[in-house]
Amino acid sequence: MNSASDTMFDVLIIGAGVIGLALAGQLARPDRKLAILERNERFGQETSSRNSEVIHAGLYYPREFLKSRLCVEGNGLLHAWCRRHDIPHARIGKLVVAANDDEEARLADIKAMAADNGVTGLEILGKRRLRSLEPAVAAQAALLSPTTGIVDSHRLMRSFLAAAETRGAILSCRAGVTAIHRVVGGYELEINHGEYRVATKVLINSAGLHADAVAARAGIDIDAAGYRLRPCKGNYLRPSPSPSLRHLVYPLPQRNNVGLGIHATVDLAGRIRFGPDSRYLDDGEISLLQDGETTTDGPAVGKAKLYAIDEGREKDFAAAVGRYLPGIAEASLSPDMSGIRPKLQGPGDPATDFLIREESDRGFPGLIDLIGIESPGLTACLAIAAYVEKKFF
Ligand SMILES: Cc1cc2nc3c(=O)[nH]c(=O)nc-3n(C[C@H](O)[C@H](O)[C@H](O)COP(=O)(O)OP(=O)(O)OC[C@H]3O[C@@H](n4cnc5c(N)ncnc54)[C@H](O)[C@@H]3O)c2cc1C
Image (cartoon, rainbow, N blue to C red; front, side, top):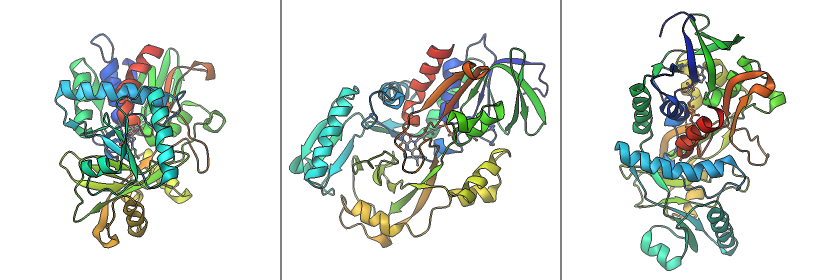
């Protein structure tokens, strides 16, 4: 990219995660100057490559939430995109399992709410059907969601980038946005602390875990606006030997949807992983995360520390998973990876929705913020991109 701000872009997107890339794929046109700015060396190095890679059906979110609508729409769009672009994916289905009568009653509630939100094909299975589908799973009943799937998120992101580049968009890596100034007709951005500047008419903030910091840099009072993120870590462990499973298996979600409970995921190679658990970052870790944001690739040590698997999680994981997969021994679990959820919901708060808004009313016309794009953000990426285009372009 040129090192002067004499080039005025039509659209600049901050962040080359699955959301920024899906937006670029959606918005790129030969007659629109569009670029994606990414501080890391490559696209997709943060949350978009540290997740369960599940194409969710949209079971749990209240009907009025954007999360609900965009997840259900996104599920269909993503499966279709993957088929069309030859992205490895599989509609393997998900089982939400109930251990007792109380939990079985909650399954029925989830089924009713999900069906109301437009999720199709849901079925409650008794013990015998469940056994025949998944002999290793012990539960009284289960909700089968046949539209839930898995996807290769890296190949998916690459396909979005290819779609955007074909229509003239540019991805600029090692380009950390370190200052944002309002100028006539748009915004001027400083890259890497003044290394160069770029200007744009429309600025899209899809900076994931740093979307609040980016909004603040543009001039928004993030505490008054309710934009401050509460990063929440999730660890994954891998069992060896691996149980044999054909479906994703989930316990019932935590009551306030902080996480979906420690579940068993199956990847496209058939490998099983357990996780993620949920732990809000402490102040020291939040400082580390924030310090990393203004440097390209973050300080390696800080990043390694943030994403190191929390120690001593084996016992809790074995107990949680053992409720539906008996015989998982603590000693059979080893660290796999971790991710950090960009949550707007703080500890003890009610569930929050995706925040997607154009900021004219706060005095920032042409600034579009996407904040709190936690799960099901991967599933919803194409629906989010279509929503942004329809609403703001
Ligand atoms: C543990 C876990 C499990 C999950 N499981 C699922 C799942 O199974 N299914 C599902 O649908 N969703 C899941 N999600 C959610 C999903 O991963 C996210 O919603 C999605 O990846 C968010 O993508 P993003 O592009 O917004 O963020 P990111 O992938 O974090 O991308 C943001 C990008 O912005 C860049 N950036 C930040 N600041 C700057 C700056 N100042 N200048 C330039 N670039 C900057 C970053 O480097 C980063 O590359 C999960 C999330 C977690 C944490």
